[in-house]
Image 1 (cartoon, rainbow over the protein chains, first blue to last red):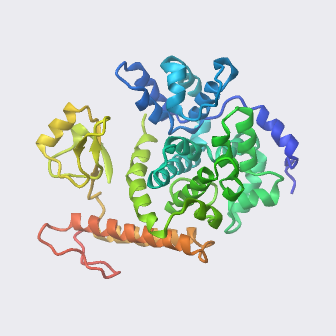
Image 2 (spheres, rainbow over the protein chains, first blue to last red):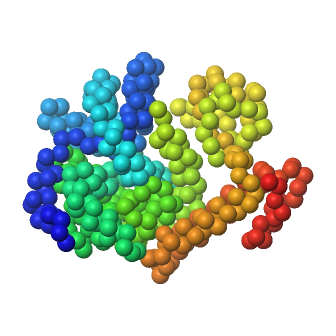
Image 3 (cartoon, each protein chain N blue to C red):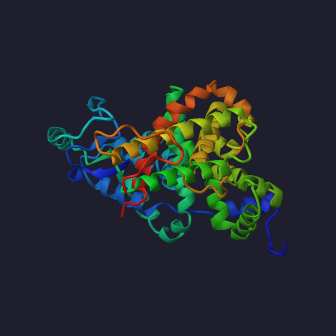
Length: 283
Length: 128
């Protein structure tokens, strides 16, 4: 190939360190701005909305976990972060996030995939009766952040991966592994380290294609793995390829789900997806 | 289904979601018919939008064509995982729900006294 592709993991990691900001969704940003101006808006309402935006969620969590706030333990959820940061800080984050409109436009498919995966993660977590459903939802939202890094910071590599995907029934992840010395899971992991995201969120970013490798919370990576499969099966959004990836049977066993559980999961998910479609078109 | 603002809702529509207050108190069940009284109550509870079932402007032929397209898309997406029983169960469940959605949409198109749509794959006689 002729493109000067970065095949060295160390070099790719340096690229990740250069990232200061990532794109976000203008519609949701505008809505949060309006919400925080209304004195009657509750923290829970703002938290729910922010949890649906991958980059904004990451920013809020990055700040909540920064040394400036001096927290003795990592903060993993938006609602927890909102209590500590307050509406004013959140508003500042919203405004600084709103300058990436044009880039966001090109990421529309991945945004739909991410928010859909978040909704599916939440649906699976609900069926499993998980108390940390919100955290898992955020993990679902962030799981493909490595693809955002690839698209924005490594465009030539993105292009050859996309060409490979277009050539046949091959997963984006498989094409990355074939052509590069790293994949979006590595990029996501490095970004998570750089942003000081808690391991409970970083782990599913790293292991959603290999959930059996997760150590800290294997069931969270397993849920995101399954949610990724479900949302791809729905054909909701664009994850870079159209395929349903194979399920890790180890992950399926970790979750102790039955095949009949797909029906209630999908019944929870359907109305959520209808709501998400609405959110993406807010002007 | 479709999300609409409360002031666009009209009696006779069918709710496609369960509505609860922030404290968890039930306001209306999924499947409930929209009435003037319900709309007034929801307005008092500061509900801005509701999700409704809809006859979405598609003809019966279009509903059937969309269903066939859905099946074709599903086949393409599942092409790599045909040997995995768990994922075949997921696919089967999705087809079950799509058939249900197809039949409910066709029922909304039909006059109230018509029998439910036939199961024949070619589709029942359509009202355009």
